[in-house]
Length: 311
Ligand SMILES: C[S@@+](CC[C@H](N)C(=O)[O-])C[C@H]1O[C@@H](n2cnc3c(N)ncnc32)[C@H](O)[C@@H]1O
Image 1 (tube, protein in one colour):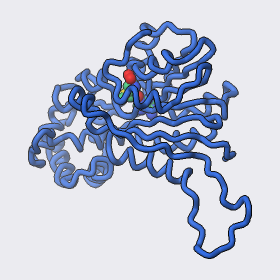
Image 2 (image 1 turned 120 degrees about the vertical axis):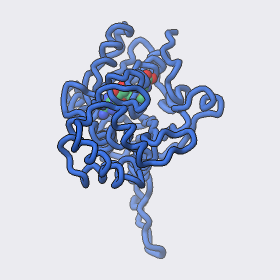
Image 3 (image 1 turned 90 degrees about the vertical axis):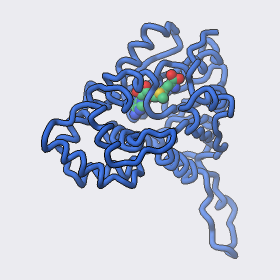
């Protein structure tokens, strides 16, 4: 058994949630360094298959260098291309489980050159896929004060969003805003320091979500999974903040809850229809894991199962 999973968040719970079938077909939407992918491979038989996506080329290069397994296909793409790529392979309705471990990986955070960290100085990039789109610095240079404030409020739930946007524009009157520490210091000048939390945490999260269109990616892809999963196929999704989790929660509710019929109406046979998903619950990291990894503190795992209802 190979072990790549030393840092994978909620590893056991998310893999158990997939209820892996010996020769099933699985998707790891967020390869990262392949901890969860390896967990799936370890439970799969010889005829099983894993397709792993990542939009970061460094994750794909890592997979090619470290994962020599004929059952694994790695795909350099945003996971929102899942439907398209599986359709091409004639696999719609045949996938036994899809795992998503959202957000950025530790190697992305730890490499100052990627621009995700407010603790180390580097170019203000923040793109997971550095081959397309614009960097955070480019966006901040052209966006208006209102646009910046709206992003920081909407995706960071930061109450001081307007003050931060004003401070950013004021800074840019004198010098270009190009590095992570410049941004971190601007935010720290207007947001009071909280215990255990850097004042720029919410601002960095918000700009990262916006630059990578993370919420749009997530909701588009969740809708696609209904047409990808086989009957009884599982969804195992780990999110790291309330905005992300709300999208996953509302998606599962939308497709698993019966519409409430007005009381007293006679129910015809067949009317109490089955829904496409069954909600199998919400889980948090164990205290042991939380003690070992700060990141797992905010993790929320949701598991759902596809029923036989055609969408
Ligand atoms: C938290 S890490 C995954 C860690 C992985 N589960 C492991 O055990 O090593 C998230 C990864 O998903 C990738 N990612 C995030 N959003 C993506 C998207 N929309 N499409 C493809 N990859 C994405 C990131 O580049 C990152 O490498």
